Amino acid sequence: MSETDQDQKTEQPTGKRLAEAMERGQFARSTELSILFPVAAVLGVLAMTLPAVARDIAEYAISIFTRFPLTPVNIDTVPVQISGVMKVSALALVPVLVGCVIAVVISGGIQSGFRIASKALAFKPESLNPVAGFGRIFSKNAAVRAGIDILKLVGIAATLYFGARNLIYDPLFSAPVESAYLGQFLHNSTLLFLGRLLIALSVVAAISYSWEKYKTGQELMMTKQEVKDEHKQTEGDGRTKSAMRRMARRLIQKQMLSSVPTADVVVTNPTHFAVALKYERGLDKAPVILAKGDNRMARRIKAIAAEHGVPMVENKPVARLLFAMGKVGESIPAELYQAVAGILAVVYRTHRYYFHRLKARRMEAIAS
Image 1: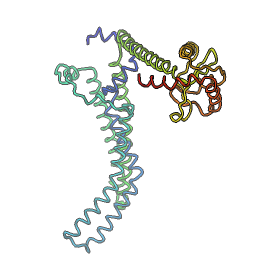
Image 2 (image 1 turned 135 degrees about the vertical axis):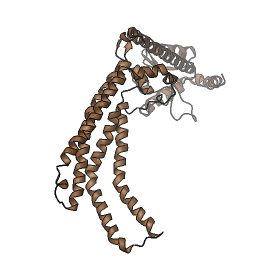
Image 3 (image 1 turned 180 degrees about the vertical axis):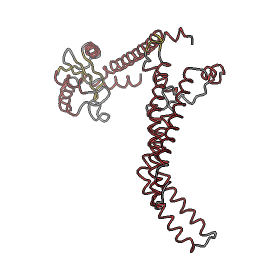
Image 4 (image 1 turned 30 degrees about the vertical axis):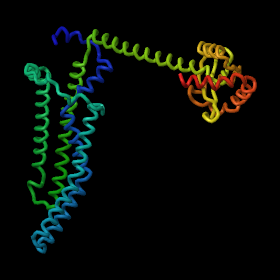
């Protein structure tokens, strides 16, 4: 991309752009941060387990050397001794390994937002382009990475130098000490060295991650035209979804209205709500709502009911509750059983001729 095009990228990346970049694996990643977490894990695990591990190793060594003159070396005893060594070694190393694995997972999760980059492993032909490869080698990013690597080298070298300079003044190198002091010396010097290394890596990792964050943000910047195009695309998708929802709503309304002629009764408000109910003995456990609507839809339901001679009963509280609590295609709420049963009882007495024809009408509806 030319510098003119690059200069036009003045807009912050949209949520869609960021999500797509995350799927491609294009997010801020720092190698130093991935090293920092395992070093911190090793330091923490050793600080908690090293005294106990040292004691276990010492006790095992004492038992081995105590029984050594009495233990024959043959094909039966050697595997036993090896298994003992492996057990003690595992007790010492497993906590460190587990801590490192957890630290690596957390480090990667923090950088990726604990999201899976599904397209990161896909083959990218442009990665084989030698021109692009040379461009990456002699780019601004490569220069910054070289500076960070030099800083990392200086930090490790300084840690080793100052650590070694302090250690040579320890009494271990200038005066007789007890053998137990050697273990204490190794313990303290190991933790001290790892602590200083952790501080140095923390500084380098902070610089490295800040740069990667800045670089990734600059790469994802968008031009005003890209923002407009994405907005149009999203808005277009929104219009399509809205149209699909309207079509689905019209289809549901059409199905509701087509079932009104087979209803037992339509309960009305009388002007604002209308609910069509049916109840077939032996099939329905309770009256079922075939259709419901308010205002304009209520008027359509009543018009179809009047056209087909469906009984209509005005009951304002029941109509309101059926509309608010009932769902089309489901039985009425249990709280309304008694009220609806009273309405149906009246309708069955006063509209016997309608129900004589209703059975045949329902059979025709099923056949069609």
